[in-house]
Image (cartoon, rainbow, N blue to C red; front, side, top):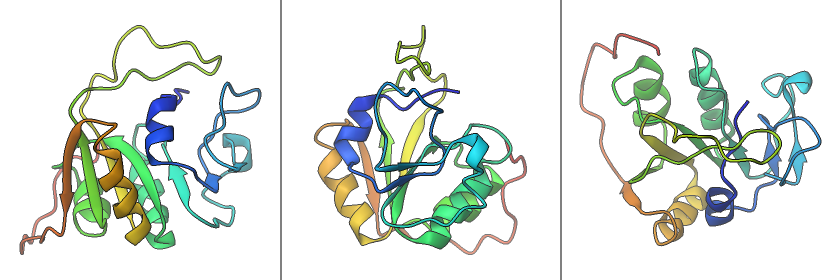
Length: 163
């Protein structure tokens, strides 16, 4: 498990819920309420403004689908713009995107920084008006490219690989 760097949370927070939180003890809170893997955040009710940094891997699309359905929050994911989950849950459903210009270094559960950066481009995905406002304000603290009000073309085929 890797934790979101605290400067990212500070730039776009505060949050009411983190359904993908690290177990306690955690070095810093990511939200007022935390669901850990043991709580099964996908199965629990979501409330308020949500922070979602799901585990990178095959289930990221399920987490972003749930965030999109909730309609109020910000997710962090790899900018894998061609994948099925990104097309379906980000391009087709998100209200705003902030593509970070630098790959962040995530932290271990004890709070120590990882030895290297994420290894992939990262974006913050906003769902709802409040999320767009927070991403707009965050671009001053998190250098990146802000994308709002885009249109999805009429592609009939969705990206191939889910990874």
